[in-house]
Amino acid sequence: MSTVTGVHRGGATDTREARPRRRLVARPAAWLVWGVVVFFFLNLLGVVGSVLVSSFGQRWFDTWLPDGFTSKWYGEAWNEFALFDVIVVTLQVSLLVVALSLLVGVPAAYVLARRNFPGKRLAYLVFLLPILMPPITYGIPLATVLYKFGLAGHLSGVVLANLVPSVPFVILTMTPFIEQIDPRIESAARMCGAGLRSVFLRVLAPLLLPGMLASAILVLVRTVGMFELTFLTAGPDSQTLVVALYYSMSAAGIRAQQSVDAMAIIYTTMMLVLLVISLRYVNPTQLVARVKEDPDA
Figure (tube, rainbow, N blue to C red):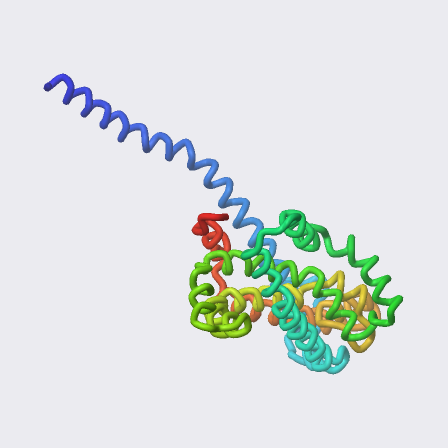
């Protein structure tokens, strides 16, 4: 017994002694990874910081800091680029895309989650294509069709173009939320005399509200940052903020660089606000966790 105990104790001692060695071996790799991450964020912070400083600088040439600081460039960018109208158009496009995407995507996600039909996997693949493919690949033929029918160049064309990736995104997001709801709840409501509309509005809608809110916020952020499709279909009166920023940068030679930097900071601030709001209501691991919890996934 003493021999066996000694062996076990020796084994435990060896195990305890081996663990610090593994940590010592893993430390250089860990330090290397953290070094790369810190280097990346320092470069990103330097780029954003230089644009921020330039947007407040009076004159900045061949020095570490500008000669002086002023906020006049924000006023000039607001007036020169008509940012109030651009932001209004951006909000109009984004809210319309969100509303129409939910109106089309939620029922489609319900059908895909509850019904089995021939070609269901093919339908999933078709819905995934606009998300997996770069927008420019289908944006050019889509814009050609919209221009042919006179829709491009207006607000309607921008909204229709942004619906192509947004509706599949809502379907992909909402399907796990619908699959986790027990179908017996709907059956019980129908047995009590509720129709399809009542079941959806009074039973499913309250249960799906977190998923609908998550989809709406994610689509909103995606639409505000969507450049390719909006650029290909927007007209002079239907430009969103990201497209207006591109035009201001392409014409930077005849404008003060500081006003362009001020516009870039306004756009970045708007995206950061949307990102903070989305992270307030949406957990980045929420969808993955829901899929793992679903026994049929």
